Image (cartoon, rainbow, N blue to C red; front, top):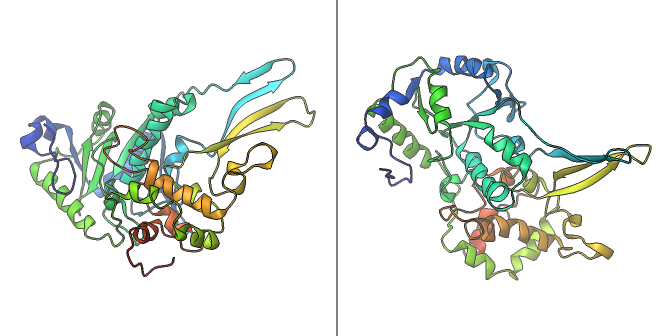
Amino acid sequence: MELKNIYGVTLQLIAMHGSERYQMDKILKEGEVSRLVERLLSQYQVFGPKRKGTGHVFDEIKSGSEIDLAYITTILPPKKYLLPQREKILSFDPSKGIIPERLEMQRKQLIFGIHSCDLNAFLLLDKVFIDKYPLPSYVERRRNTVTVALTCTEVDDACFCSSMGTGPSPDRGYDVLLTWLGDRYLAEAGSAEGEKILDLIEGRGAGQDDYKAKLKVIENTKKKFKKKINTEGLTEIIKENLEHKIWDELGELCLACAQCVMSCPTCYCFEVRDTLRLNLKEGFRFKEWDSCLLLEFAEVALGGNFRSSRAARIRQFIGHNLGWGGASQYEDLDGRFKCVGCGRCIRVCPVHIDLTDVASRLRGEVVAASI
């Protein structure tokens, strides 16, 4: 039986799962994380958060000492391991014709330390590229991807996953979930693959006090969120305000640099480009991340453009994230939006556009902010 507490987190106590739960889940001391990663390196290609300058990036991990779990966010989301920024689709030449690329992964990849917002982004991308528009390369990567998720214990001024129902701790979608309890990690298995990973941990089994401590950690983290967004009826509010003056105001402010889209964990649009060799006979076809904020995105033949104004383009970006891009478009998202509340678009915007402030203004609320 699955129950959820008032914080929307699945309860995983002995009374609900039986004694087997204690035998499966483990307790991991802080210093043992790097040793666990070292063991995983022999079985998987491991990616995780690494410090870069004053921030963090997801990068390949070659040693357990490289991983840094004390991070709030990364510059780019781990989406790049399922949807590469640039990927070859096919090659062509006169003698061989068209040769499609066929991805066959020889080794599974493991994403270590993924936060709940980014994990929920994976679940939405699954709806797009597995359920609705199957993309063979995505399907191959996804079925060969293992996730070790990490409950957030700290947030910054841009985080609002709690309002979006996607954090600070995931209730599904992970193989292993790590939660820092102050002096130890609770490691919970979420799949058969996760159970195999927990077998690599030599610590003691988890007990009822550990699960209770986890719920307390989540409760305390939720209290740290400063940024909030009221999502009740938001889809309808946006659809009813497509001609609101705020879009023109944002269009004047927006630089159309597309940093918001490029850092978004759920934006999935791409363009296709052909590249020729110098002999002008052989070439390649690539697909690359694209952005609805760019002028050329909605351009069609003879120069027609359905979104030639910046106002129309930023309305599309915000509308897709908070309006028509989530549960209203894809089933089984439990009412969740395309936006997962990671806050990356807010952090990277050079003119400080904040989509939570936009949502508040569309409700008619007074916003003492940047727009």
